[in-house]
Length: 185
Image: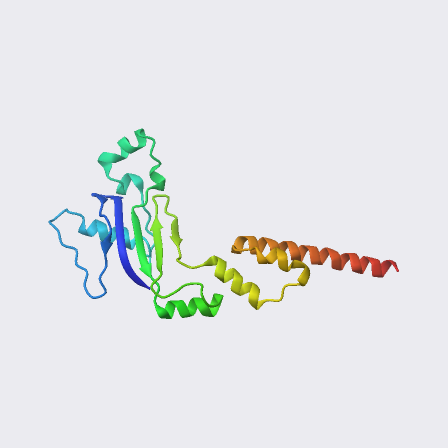
């Protein structure tokens, strides 16, 4: 995947970098001393560090002169996103997804958004169609005729997993009932 855009907010001396486009060939951060070039890179690094697990710490990283004011205003600082990145799916990435989830789930050029908040949870919007992935899964696996109407309306993996678990449990119970009836005869 290619990194396309980055935005840093409320991190050290950066209040809002706005979206910074990342060029394929050269991206250069230029500015005076203490203008936030290193802070920008430190925030970006926290999305996917190579070796360590650095965290955003409000009292160390949130702009100190705004922290108290924002808390007094009732702002939940844990929800502030100091770093947000936009990546682009490349053809090789799309192939990996298609091999796993089938065609039409994501296309080259689609964007994935990643962000990390001061609660240190990494979140994302994949740019993938979960509905298409579920549809591909259901098309690839035999569904009993009596259950096809139920499965036809499922568009989320969480719902699919719940329905499958319910059906597995139901089939165990009916198998136990058949075994019990056979033993009683």
